[in-house]
Image 1 (cartoon, each protein chain N blue to C red):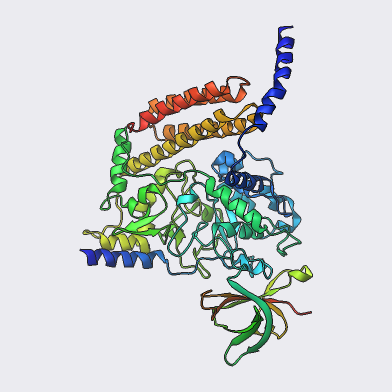
Image 2: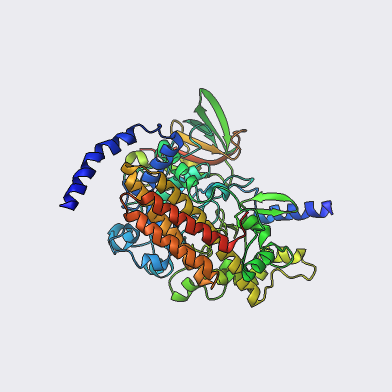
Length: 125
Length: 452
């Protein structure tokens, strides 16, 4: 009986989709670098792009006085932050990950800081 | 002459009365934060199109809006900004669906294709969130549980709302079309929202009076018949199965698959709402039922007008064929998801009406007690509390009469309303009149539930 209850609970958990991420990314695009509520205060990294390697899909950023490699995946959203120029932010892609640009990286798992869930990159001139 | 003497006497006492105010204990910092949040919620436009949080979450209408309420608003109300601001006339709202069904446009799957990628949802109330948004995966906000950007918290929710609903243009440039809430403002808004409505779960079963409501509660709690309590523990927003709490969970119940959903009958563009995530998984968040009966229309698409209709939805083919319906059928020895007779639908609805009225009584009592404690100089706040209490009492009357329930409770509520109105007008008898209103509310409660 206990096993049945456990199985039902497991099925219910799957049905309820509790393992999925919860934050809404649609409006996130319009939030400038460093202003994402609850994230930009330490759960993201904000720095400058050191390099992007398309082969390994690794973005290296200089943040918190260290160089941090971050993996870009198919699920990583890249946004161009143009708010500094009073322009609307836009979807970007890996071609926007140019060295020297200011960037904010949010992680799939903020504790491990390996896979990027989204990247905001300051638009170039 | 007599009036003049009274006026002079009053003037002589006024400085003393205000002096009393200055000798009170220092205000509670948490209460100050809540008050600041209230002010932001109702007055702060964030330099946008003129809307505030309170534009859609109206205090006088249970922190939501519905077509009947919308019909009372003047045309220059900020709710109708899409009808007056040329920059927002396309792809910001659908005025017809807003006015006829209370639907608001959301771009939950992104802003890249505004002509085609949007959903239209009702405005959920923000009551009782202290006990209705936590889940093992974190807080669930909004109809699909993923309403907030940032860390997904209630605190972060306002940032997304400003971007979606407050913007001056569809460019949505922070610092140009709106300003984002500051961290302090987010703290205050969160504190205010968490202060609204009930702070504790019910503990069912309640010792109800009234044959129909009693039977409704039995069906609600019967996991082989109504099955309501599986996803709505204690008529709240949290699920539990096999003794394991799932918190405020998401489910696909097939609401989108109903035939003849009102908005779709208009011929207006109504894209499928795919619920949680991008792309969506078809699931929506579980709302609390305690506050349901006076906050319709029901479901994320406002597709059902009455609480009886909302209960009857779970008899529908749409629910039966949904993942949640199939799941319940899989647990049932006869393979039935939910199957209620028409009388049983009404009984469950009667139960929901009664617990809603009990919540109206609880809230209005608290508001009247608050008003009675206010000193003379706090008259404006006292009047505000009494006005809110009257609104709650009116809701209770409407909810009960709508189901033909407990004439004794309705009579007592009407008495409480009379005393409350008098208390709001009174200069010197506010406390005693508020106390009499509270006594009438006790009688109303006693007519619905056995005294403990």
